[in-house]
Image (cartoon, one colour):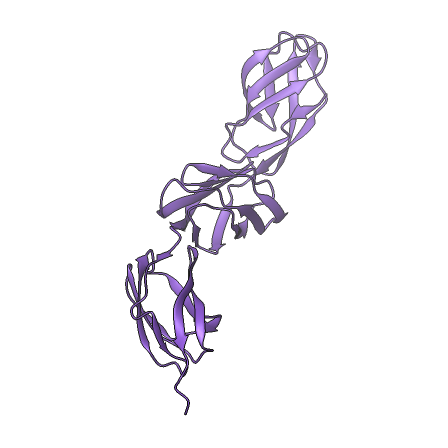
Amino acid sequence: MPISPNQGSTGGGTTVTITGTNLSGATAVKFGTKSAAITANTATSVTVTSPSGAGTVPVTVTTPGGTSNPLSFFYVGAPFKSGLSPTSGVTAGGGTVSITGTGLSTATVVNFGGVTATPTVVNDGLITATVPAGLAAGPVSVSVTTAGGTNNGLSYTYVDGPTIGTLSPISGPASGGTAVTIPGTSLTTTQSVTFGGVPAPYAVISDTTISAVTPPGTAGPVDVVVTTSGGSATGTGAYTYAAGPGI
């Protein structure tokens, strides 16, 4: 006589179906010493709502013909989440986050502000999930649903990818040391600025402006790349290193 599912929240409320034979007219379904509410009953199945409980309990069905052999039902506590990493990423989604805590082995859904993702269970203390696309830039709550219930309390921030415009000035000596203003959008979370692949010192002035100092380079145009927590923006040939005079 199978029971499905065979586990549920310690708070009760799980819909459980017990299948077998000669089950019509069921008068009681017990989870340990507690009675479950019967919601449907046929000759081959009984559907109930589990009562609250803890640990592993025997489940029996009583009909006018007697009481069945017991089946095991496992009560699972609500999950506890202690951390999420990373805590931000591009609005387009696609990154992988790790969620740590306890009671995560039965996780079935991770919800990012109303958008769901299917987790991969590593162990009871760790799950991973691919971040779905966000509805808009900004923070969203993250919840995890397991057989024991749903737990909230974590936050993930969607960040729009950056854009960059025309640099000022657009050229300078190959020796470097030129102060350059880089205009754009979504620049607040800038993590690096490179000229021809070489990192440059920079300062975020605002969400639309970065100030950088060119590193030494080789004469000719180079790409300028700004990387933020929302992704990267490339200005192809956006800055030109000028060769010094020779006599």
